[in-house]
Image (cartoon, rainbow, N blue to C red; front, side, top):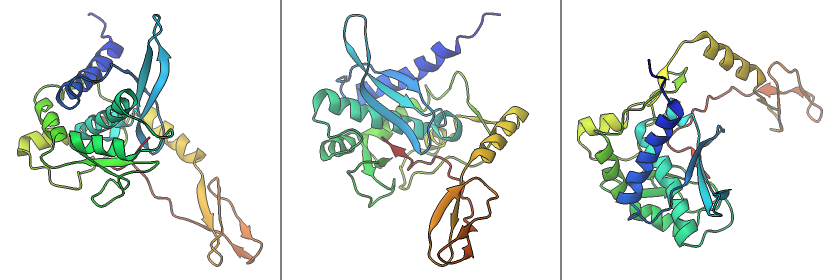
Length: 257
């Protein structure tokens, strides 16, 4: 049996999506970035303009994607993250970026032009510029049409990330007005749920290491620490109360930096 080159297949697949967007949304005006995978909390993607350089001295931008994209999210959310980071790449090459991490009016205008509505909340009505931003597809916009063109072709991953959650991918906050079959394919989860004991053990270890929030019910002072602490507010002489944990799965409005 011929061994499968998972690395090559994976990056060819991501690169094909980016190439399609470069052609349909950016008029082939973008240089080819280096795609990397980088795990993080609360962010799905990140653009760095000058992390790499070729043997010939050409600086290459980097688009880092969170592997959780390929486990807990839909094809539409992956595509949105790639296109959003391509807007940063476009601005670096053709525009005037602001300070690192800040999303200015020029970036927001480019997002709107390609059919993504910038929003700090990931919902209609959110501010359109700022340090941490998300977005959602504009109904009938260029982006969602470009995604629909891929729905019958590239939505077959050469490999799927394994994860332990039965939560469905987040639904866009606005109706996208696509054929039902096309929308269903775009909203399909990329990953594959698994009950592998090793994944269960890994999640249990993360749970043990996580920090919890404790708060004083009288003065609202907060501290963070490991689970099971017995803490006392010296000012009020009251035991701090453990704040119930809220599981935060990366959703469509997770931040992009």
